[in-house]
Image: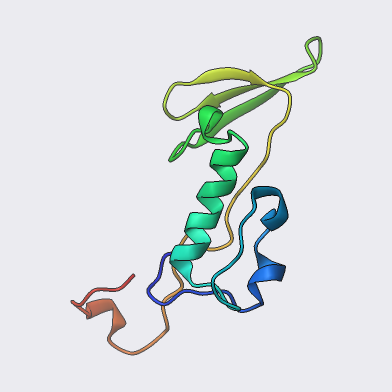
Length: 112
């Protein structure tokens, strides 16, 4: 989450994975959003996850190639590649749910 004031609602040592593996100690009992993002990036850097990641990309087609035992993946950016594993992440909050208040449809201020 990137909203202002975002923080863990459970203790950092429980919420943040791979602390021992990456040698990281949370600065607070309930870590705040900037530290959570830093920690996530540190995991990705430590395990080399950025080198094959595709950000802001949507999968447009998955086709199982039985003879190869792999997936053919196509994306909205024109990428086509084979993959042994596919991880589906639909996200739980892709669109904000605005309150049903009277006048919200004509509100001119900033909303999310």
